[in-house]
Image 1 (cartoon, one colour):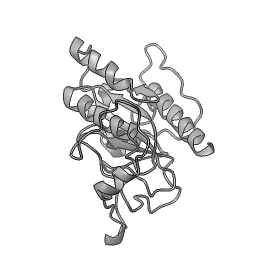
Image 2 (cartoon, rainbow, N blue to C red):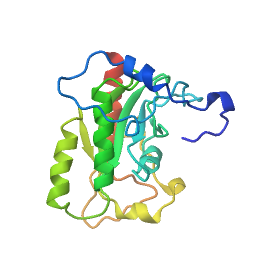
Image 3 (cartoon, rainbow, N blue to C red):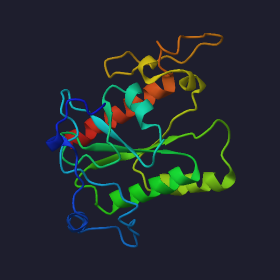
Image 4 (tube, helix red, strand yellow):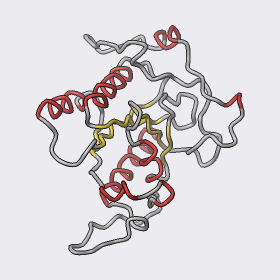
Length: 218
């Protein structure tokens, strides 16, 4: 999703920090709220100006989290532009972060912000963890991942997909709720990466979409 066609009045503006604090009357005991600098802004104007409206939003905890790639891969998703889409029709949010120290620390802050009720009424669906590189994480990062994931209502771990490095966003395949269930790759099969979406990416998209539908139905 991009901002083409948006006029100056539709550019999201962050709510005043005092207003955000006033929105949070009930917080879990012992919760340490992130500083204002650590929090993502709450947009007071809808991001989406088109229909159909996004079913869920991807909130990057930091630059380079992988939001643009995932927003391209999942048809019902859109980029929340690093803020909480409080004025959009479906304010269902997934925090997205890489598995490096910066990413996990930033995600932890946003999840604490959500736990403190400082999201303008957005619904936090969960956390998407994106690998910062292939291979096993160091022990210290694995422990930090566990701590961060403990604050999220649901967690989805995106696999490392090497072919994504060779594709532009325009070349990437897109998963849609109308698609048939993704099939696991067959042994020795070499599907065209620009035509067939990675089955795990498709399944995660499906699960988040179902979580968003459930949130709207509540």
